[in-house]
Structure formats: structure tokens, C-alpha cells
Length: 467
Image (cartoon, rainbow, N blue to C red; front, side, top):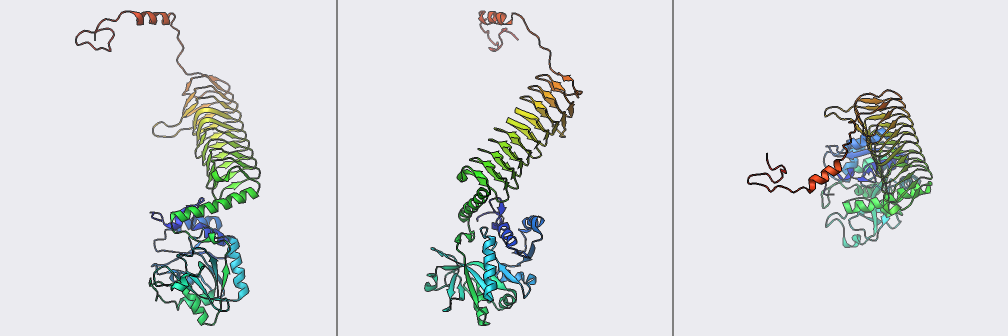
């Protein structure tokens, strides 16, 4: 991957690569999920996050990277002889619960010691080849990682091992003890358990996966290809559930996003994280929603939401920015070029345009005029502004927090409010206007008068001709 980030922590559609096979295993009904990782445990924090959602993920540590068989052996303490053990590669984000369920059922029917998930590829380069016995069972898997692992004839085989297996627990534990590292790389290969099991007069079967896209990721080019497939599946799932995605080719939706029936997702929209879009809502075009809720029937146009909670029937945008902690109650509005942060906008209240609302509580049915600013930061602390229900804030009002505007109160246009305004009162805080009669004529006469030449040492910008 050529990255400081471990491969399995790179994200595909909003979920770390390692979390995809974990989720698939759980969806397939796995009673126990064990992840094998290195001694530095780089995956631990991500796995802990998965645990809070779906129960505990067990971790087994492989002290040294000595091959896939050694990795499975590191988890031997979690394997009981009568278990059915499914082994997955952590870099297979496209593996589905249906594939795992089909593999487990095929394995149970066969009575075999092991069942390999295989695929037939046009270009099998880099994958281990499956060598069949005359009776159609699996005789062995030949690795191709290094020159000398496979013969020329074996390299012509197009059926490959996907690295996904179903094992009888007891047979697996016995075979792991007999695996040897006599190969080009000196590693303990998991496929080497196949001939060992056959030597113990146990059969090994194959289960062919029809969709070869469920294979793994080795570089960023493959990750992009996998992401495209995962995104298409996500789109199809939502569209089949009653969501309109106007142009899937220009729409990004993370795997854990929830979208209600009859919602419309317009082009060039990105929905990320744990976002929830209510039924009948419309998001986009050109909108980004991250870890936010958009209620039923709401509209988000040309806007950016992060950590926001938008109620039902709310209008957002165009060109609105809702930052973490922004809450818009039912029927509220955040209009054009409005930024809201850590604030609660009451039901039916409107912030139509050109305003910054930060650390503010606004009651129900209040109108915030254009150009309103809540000055919430004094250079040291964040302070809150309280604006009551049914209030009317005139244009270009600045609230210097901490300050309150009572229920039903008004402000005069262009006011800087530094003191609390009682309910029903009008707060005006601005310089009194003064008109200078005849100013325009006097200015014209002054500008048309001859200018004295600048003397030596005089400042050319000084029209008085002196200091």
C-alpha cells in the first residue's frame, strides 16, 4: 500500500478493510470472531469500535510473520475440536454473508475435513492454484508467491484458492501441528494442511465462488476497484429499498449510512459515517453530510453538514455550513451562507441568510435577520447567547455573548447587543444618526478649487501644504 497506515485500516466506503469481513462473519451467524494480528496490535482500536456495536471481537497475536498456517495456529486456543471453523483473509472487504453461509452449508453436507472456497479467473497470476484429484476433490494447493513454488504446468491452472476455508476444528488442529516450512519462502502455508488431511484419509472439497470480485486487496489500485464494487452494492441496496439516487456515478454513500423510503439523493452528493436520511428527504445536489441526521421531508441543497441534527421539514442551504452540535428543530431553516455551530435552533425558527450562529439557543418561531452574528468567543472562553421564542432579530445585529434576548423581543437593525433585552422589549445599540446639510455641495467646491503646488520638503499627500 506504500502507506504509514496498516493496509487493513484503510477505509472502503467508510469502513476499515478489516471491519468488512468481521461484519460479514457476524451477518452469517458466526458465534465467535477471532482476529489474528501482530504483536503491536495496530487493529485493536478499530476492533474495539466494532465490539461496541456487535459484541466482543477476540484477538489472537502472531508474534512473528511466519505464514498463514502459523497465523491460524496463533488462534488455536479459541478452536474446539467440534467447531466448524471459517478462515478468512482480513483484506477481503467484498466477502458477503451469503458466500460464507453457502460455504458453511456445503462443508456440513460434505462431511469433509476441509472445504476450500475457489474461483476460476482469466488471469490467476499471484494466486495459489487448486490441484484436483481424479475424483474431483482437492489434492493440494500450490502457492505461486516465489519462483520455484509451482511448476509450469501448475501455473496454467486457472482455478485458484481464495484463501477462504471451512474446517472441522479437530482436523485443523491436528494438521497445523504437521505443517512444515520447506518452501521457497520458508513459511508455514495454510494450504499445506490439505495434503496432510488427505494423508490422514480425510477428504477435502472445493466450493466455487461465482463472484471473483470477493478477492483481496494488495495495493491502492485494487482498493479503488474494490471500492467501486462496494459502492455499487450500497447504491443498489438503497435503490431496491425505495430510495431515488438520481445519478449513482456521481454519488458517494458509505456503508453504514441509513436512508429512508422515498428520499432523493441528487447528483454530486456524499453521505458519510453514521448519517441518517429520513424518508422523503432530499439531499443535494452538491451536498456533503457527515455523521449527521436529516429528518423526514427535509431539504439540504449545496451544503455541508458535519455532526448536525436536522429535524423534520427543515430547509438547509444553499451554501449552509452546519458544524458539530448544530441542532435544527422541526420546521426550522438555515439558509444561504449561514454557519451554525453548537447551537439549538427552535422549531419553526429561521436563520435565512448571511449569518453566523455559534453557541446559541434560539426558541421557537424566531426570525433571525440577515447578517446576524453571535460573538461567542472572548479570546479565552466560549460564551452562549440565548434568544427567546417569537423574537425578531433585525438585520446586522451582533450579540456579544454572554447575552440574552427575551421572548417576543426585537432588536434594531445594525445593533450591537451587549446587555440583556427583556421579553417584549426593543433593543437598540448603535450611534445616533446625524445628517450634515449641504455636504455634497461643499465637497464639490473643495474638490474643484486650485491646488497649491508642493514646496520643497513638503509631503505630496498633505493637501494643506504643511505639517
